[in-house]
Length: 364
Image (cartoon, rainbow, N blue to C red; front, top):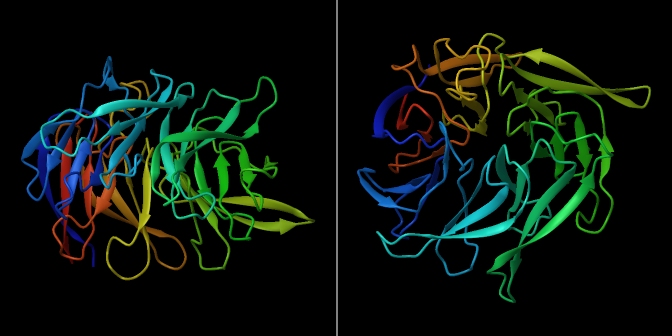
């Protein structure tokens, strides 16, 4: 049976990114979104993080990645945006009500959004921005001290550089495509095969597809249970949601597109987690409201948030929220899921230009 949901307003702030983070180390999840954090368990107390630059309808804040950057036991936040051309981290002061300190990680060019994956398997995530107009593919690795704690700085690793007049494009994913257990990088027009030593050896470029203006992330998962990973790709600024299977034909990998939902638009962010508690992951996603401020295909359609369940042959769509603009809710550019109440069920925190909301998972 489909899950039931309780929709709760948190804030009218229009930041498009939010993360679930225990800011004050009290063991209770909090929500960080843009210039503020909201104290759990009821998220009614609102505390400042810092001033985030605004550009028209946008804020220069397109991710909310938790990481203890300086190793002091307090979770900091990593973000970046399109206009600032920098990747940044906000230092958690460890004192409620006190502003956080902003630090520059590195110059990147315009950032679509950023994700974090453990590329080298050392137990600490690396930071990977999607910079569509850039030729270089960059990964930022946290420097650590002798105890393995964050040292407050990052090392920039350029793993690949496209030829002149070519760029990485819109879209970013990470996972094992080659089948060797390593963390490959997916971009718009192909994938980078991770070598045995990702920081010293050469990454191999496989230009095998064109995903268009793809979602961030592109999900890499064994969708159909055949023992090899496929890709799930949303259209970030148009209609469509697909998954891609592959097989080797005459020594070459050939990809096949399978439709999931061609009728809804702006599938910009996606999460692959077990939302219904059956031990198998589902695809959780929805529309990024006003992604290009009214200029995208499908901008004025009814919209919402959904989860898609693999039924053994295809994906079945389940609606979490759906309706006209002003009544329904989208998911922004970076949303999050976690158990906010200790129920054992995953809840959804959905930011966006249509406000910040929680969808509490009430079970079946």
